[in-house]
Length: 282
Image (tube, rainbow, N blue to C red; front, top):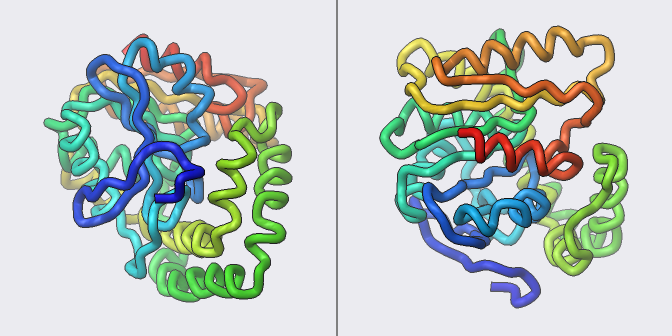
């Protein structure tokens, strides 16, 4: 394990994952970052909840501090990974998932309802209809990982990785980068992280399509559910996005929606207090 990163590498569900735990209290919180994200995306939320709950932020394979893998992720594999982490942490768990990870969290709840105590979806990805080109794009995942290898061998990741991350954070968040610089350098200078991010992007449409299929076969459990909707960076389609998330909140009879008109997509960075309060309200 890189001594510049906190946490530990654990083997769960056949994968070696970087996991950072903090605090005490039950049920544990399992924090899942959005597409290409890392455990440090949750630092502001963890600071608010560490005295109340045990928080467990993890990195999917190839991201953050987790070693890379060669296989392409599937919705079922991501749901089973959450299940393995839940058992490791001490199920049932409360899942807090951002953006793309909302697909994984919903599938986890449908496939492993006995392992989930509640759920907060933070501006989750949502596709009411089957996306086009779902299958063909997934086949590009090996090329995406190859791009990461090229970025590593060429030195691009070491030279530009942290800068690119900082620019992206300033574009997407009012607060910018909240992670300590040494964590960002340790992660963003690894070429395979870029490859894993791009590979995840190729699976987005396939996972969205698979989730629509899963909804027809597995019911969503009767659990406390909060869907946080961010409208601050949605131009012209805000009402449609709000309604789409309202449908997600209605998956559970104990579901509710929190709408943030002036907050962007990275809610956990700009308004961690809202995420923390949603957890408490469950």
